[in-house]
Image (tube, rainbow, N blue to C red; front, side, top):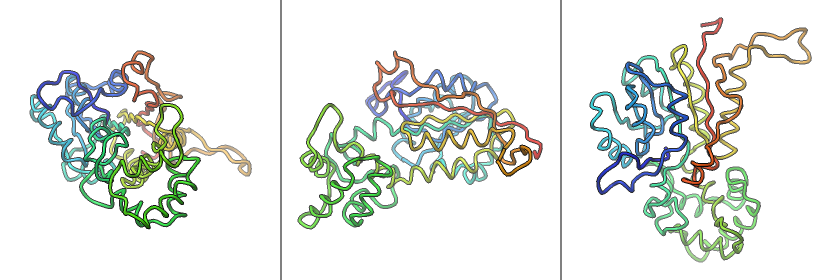
Amino acid sequence: MEMSASDSEGPEQEFYHESILLEEVVAALAPQEGQLIVDGTLGGGGHTEALLKAGATVKGIDRDAEARHYASQRLARFGSRFEAVAGCFSEISKLAKAGNWGSLDGVLLDLGVSSHQLDAGERGFSFRFDGPLDMRMGEKGRTAADLVNTWGEAELRQLFWDLGEEKSARKIAAWIVAEREKVTFESTLQLADGIENLLGRRGRTHPATKVFQALRMEVNDELGELRRFLEVVPDLLKIGGRLAIITFHSLEDRIVKQTFREASKLELDRPEWPAPRPNPHLVYRLLSRKGIAPGAEEVSRNARSRSSRLRLVERIKTPAA
């Protein structure tokens, strides 16, 4: 979903940022004319554009109407080979059935939040620009303000610890509950500045970073979306079809890594078994043992890429297939 400013023109050029691991994604999916690939996190269309240039047909899924509108304008020159589809990537089975897509040659997920969403204060993701405490990637559902103003102290503490891995989760949760007795939390800077005043600041990282991450992930059910997607996507891929996922933090990367590893083992073994048994969940071949990290040049050019990892698998024919 990280967005690329390459090959772009017009007043909306600032909508998106440079696509993460672009060359690696194209090499991994190996797009060709006649292939159908789904970009489950369309964003501004940077990855999709590269896949289209290679000749593939691409369906780009995004719950963000602004992203779909922008990408549709940007990629209009590709005509019927591109379609922006409203929805969440976890709904890929339903969307594929409704659109009569058939089997897929490749699927891409870029789990990063787009630079535009981070930098647009009105979207409520940023602790650098003031805006409503929203953080929704789509137009429906509860906002970050709803969580901050209504959840109990224990719930907030657990949220900040589990999804933000925030060491000061207890202190921050207690402060929020005490503070909202005096005033309702409504804006991003109201929360971010309050956390900074509470904890102080050391180094370049803003002390509210992990709290904002946790709220964003909960508001958009990001880990739930990922788990639901991983359950259904094997059935949509052709034999030889490839799945590429770019992660940005340890929680989502752990889910992807473990899912790929368990679904690519030829055999399972347990101490109580007399011998190993065929893996009933075998559907993939690992294309990379370790996550592919961006090179030094990309990191120096785009600091937001530094925590990204690309993981790849290929759908294989199994004995049960």
